[in-house]
Amino acid sequence: MARRHHAGGYELTKPVYFIGFMGAGKTSVSQYLAKTLGLASIDADEYLELLEDRIIADIFAEEGEESFRDLETQYLEELSRRSPRFIGCGGGVVKRPKNITIMKTHGYAVYLGVTAEEASHRIPNTDSRPLFKDIETARRTVAERIPLYEAAADVYVETTGYSVPEIADQVEAILLENGILVKED
Ligand code: S3P
Image 1 (spheres, rainbow, N blue to C red):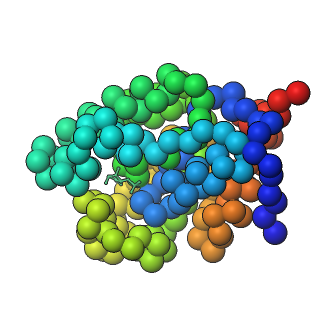
Image 2 (image 1 turned 45 degrees about the horizontal axis):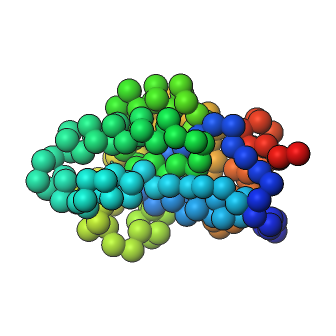
């Protein structure tokens, strides 16, 4: 049973990055934790879209993936220097070794695990995700990225079969245990 908290009384000692494949629940879990703990969260892709004033699908279509990855690194670095918050990262953030270094230097990375099948059920409109394409491609991408997610992660949390509150509870316990989330006196 998921526990509920009243907002307030907690702080993060460093940024917490959520990494994992599209549909792993990075944004939902990050927002849920922020709300229940009274802390800040941000979706790295939304931040990028806001500051670039363009949607990711258009950046991919107009300039290609490499340009998007450059922007992703730039904004990840920027967000990492701000006061600690929950950061929902794009699924491909681990493709650049520099991003892994940024996360290791500044914060704590939670790898939310999901299968390609489960992700395809969770994502209602894959048109907005230029790299999702079809289930076969998704399966291949997940397989390719597993070693990268593992290299970047401080901890792994399985999400298949669990609700957002259940996953959030598990993450919260891990963060408390590791001193990443602390209760204010
Ligand atoms: C990508 C995942 C997307 C977004 C972009 C590329 C990827 O983020 O950054 O479409 O390479 O897996 P979500 O994981 O939030 O969908």
